[in-house]
Image 1 (tube, rainbow, N blue to C red):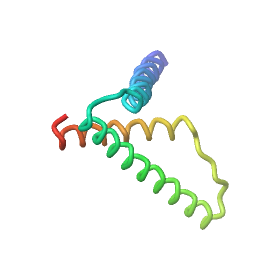
Image 2: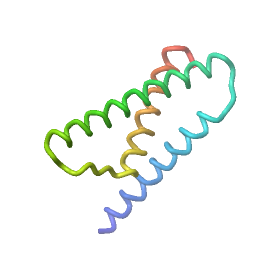
Image 3: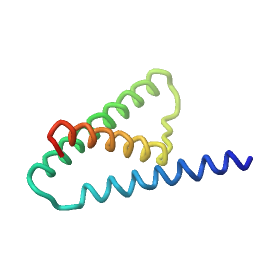
Image 4: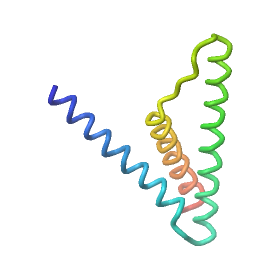
Length: 95
């Protein structure tokens, strides 16, 4: 039981850091290269999340299931995807 609570606390801290980092990078001003990196990461994240939601809606419609979504899980998947895209474009553009 105690190990599970420690695991939840660790993942919660990691997810909180990712969420705050996502917001800070979107709001922080920077030079032109940094803005391009953030713009590309944001674009690919939005595209991936929108595609996932579209597939989810189509699947739920086809199987006649209720459309439910957990906003916490959605936020964390968005933050993880944005973080990965940001790392990719920073490496690609030398940031």
